[in-house]
Length: 429
Ligand SMILES: Nc1nc2c(ncn2[C@@H]2O[C@H](COP(=O)(O)OP(=O)(O)OP(=O)(O)O)[C@@H](O)[C@H]2O)c(=O)[nH]1
Ligand SMILES: [K+]
Ligand SMILES: [Mg+2]
Image (tube, rainbow, N blue to C red):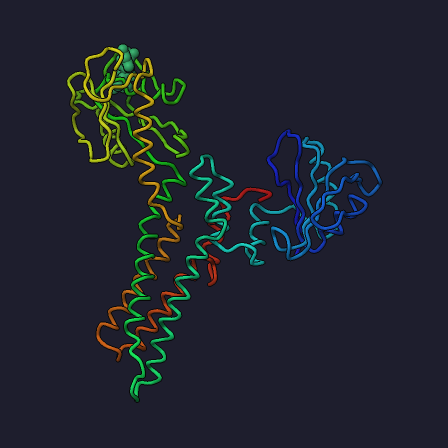
């Protein structure tokens, strides 16, 4: 297998740029560049030179031994000065060394997976961590990267294997008297795993929102001040505002970090019966996007009503133009900022309550695997309800459930999902 190298830090000017090498020739290559390597895991300051002895940079060099590195292979890290020219010069010299080549996107992580340093769910967690922009995303990704899903899957696996073994023991005794009735223990094991799977399955939808962002739509009658409110939240003129009713037509999206939660705020066309064809299209879009959003903020004018949409139980209803006074209940003003902090607190509170429902699984891939496993457990439970004569069939169902769960952590062949997972990784990761 080739020894690979790449810039591990972001491209561009920086204080330090880290170039990483991984593979059986990493130490040899590092030695050629640096003249000698420090002891494993200890940093050493070295002069990096090309084969003609010309100085490339003075760098901090680190070395990790095979079996004790991120990829599981021999790894060398060169912490160079972070200029594009320095990085280019070092990469150029590495590229001329025999047996070395530039890594493909995600290749370091792929090797970590192949060498068993990370399981498949951890690779997904790492991908999410590298993408994390908010605190909730960081925490969720780190939980997956630390192997929490693998730990849960292992617990389910152990209990299902135990249940299958109990059933198989019964089969062996089929012709004789069964020494103990295993039904209660098998029943408890299956109910337990199935219940935990259900919790995880329900949590995926929320975990996905944490990963991709919650959508919060601002809706209400024309001229209520929706776009002015959006601009205040965004801290910039994201949407056009004017005294003309029907100014906003397209849905305008602004991504924000609300107390650590990733949120996309949607500004929408004011809702009313319009004779203007373009405005009507805008209103249709407003209703569709608002219905699909996780939460709606109804911004009302002095008439206090909205056409075409009704608030759901979690939705937030507020009056606009608070600075003009007169409204009862929560009132906000995008113009002066009055009441906006309380509105944000209410939005955050609703979303935090939902976010708390996330468990360990974060993706549709996990959800599908768990739904399949839960269905197989359900089949086994149905077989057993007919009596222990069906123990053999039930045991087979449990083996199917175990195989389904194995795909969570990549214990079984999951080649087809790898390309998709690694597609999100960029060079040097
Ligand atoms: N006094 C006051 N005026 C406001 C406030 N918010 C908006 N306005 C004014 O009300 C008018 C309409 O504001 P917009 O933000 O365009 O209202 P909108 O709800 O987005 O309107 P449409 O996009 O047409 O549905 C503008 O003239 C704003 O300057 C506010 O909080 N207080
Ligand atoms: K307007
Ligand atoms: Mg508007």
